Amino acid sequence: MEGIIAWLAPILSTIIVTAATASINAKIASGERKRDEARAETQAKRDAEAKWRDDVDKRLSDMEDKLGRSITQQTVQIRSDIIHKCHRYLDDLGRASSEEKETLSDAYEQYCKFCEDLEIENDFIDMMVSRVMALPEREI
Image (cartoon, rainbow, N blue to C red; front, side, top):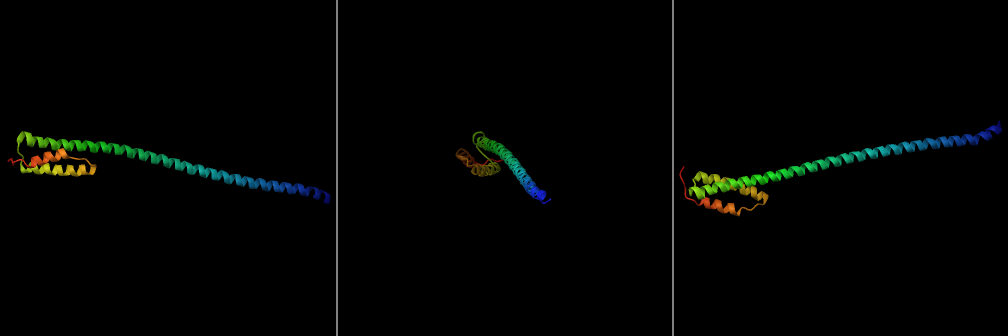
């Protein structure tokens, strides 16, 4: 019996070591799989966030373009209104009432603030408005 045990001991020892090594390798592989899955999940989140940021940036850029066009159109419209009023008073009537001058002055001041914010120069409008302000009074 001692001969069988002596013969069986190294075989059993090898089987036990092999089973323990296989178990350890399985746990390591499982840990690596979990780590790889976590990395993939993290990368997927980063990719989704990057896509979201790109979408937000694109929408903001589109909104800035629209806002820029809108501001340009507003500037053109206000300028046109002021020029039209100035030509009416200067060319057609040759006079302006104090109410008309006050209204024109208010519109001009708001336009100047608007243009100052946008860094637009108004030399032409400045001159026209000052000429209207110098016109004689007309009664309504």
